[in-house]
Length: 259
Ligand code: PGA
Image 1: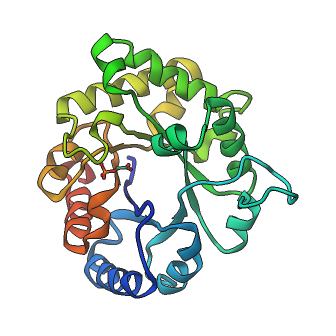
Image 2: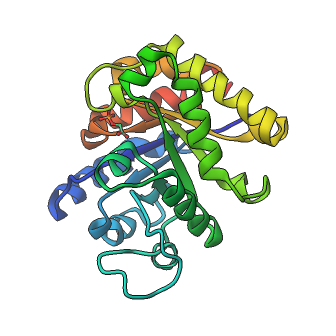
């Protein structure tokens, strides 16, 4: 059985005092359910150290929102390497979020390098994939998603990939309030699992965690997380509101799939 995971992507939000208050609420409200759901928060880079300090021993993990494509220390102004993230105790990192793909020229080849760098230092990458509205309407979205995955995974063995998590985030649903319906999301998750089974084997495809992201909120989390192939969520806007985020975590923890 795959354990549910809920990850909060804070994007470019947060301030020292605001972070203290939010983390304080999360720690209190999530402590009774932490056995049934893994919870992760991804603050902006500059607050990673602060947030990991606040979360020490709370059972909530800390993740980065991105990583450098360069593996070694060097003249890469503004970059932060996977080794640096590991050095401060970061355990997960988002890779290939659609905002990085569109705003920072993160091509599939760049994403493959980032994924490899993270795996090499033992950080679990959360690879974000998803189609635009145009690609959905044209009917090419399955191929778009399959290509995003196989390009990111290229050159890596099944063993090396065992720590990877996937997050299906249709671009048209991110921050728009337009969630994919549970059936639409389930259909894509099932497709991804099937594609992974044929390319990397059924043992891998059954084990891999696949999150859904795109306007998840307390009101729709139950229905999304009760789908057989949706193992949790990557939450943007709602991750900044403690009542919303904790209700989403509770929905994952109490999903009928968790027994
Ligand atoms: P959203 O963002 O929940 O605000 O739609 C999700 C994401 O971009 O990870």
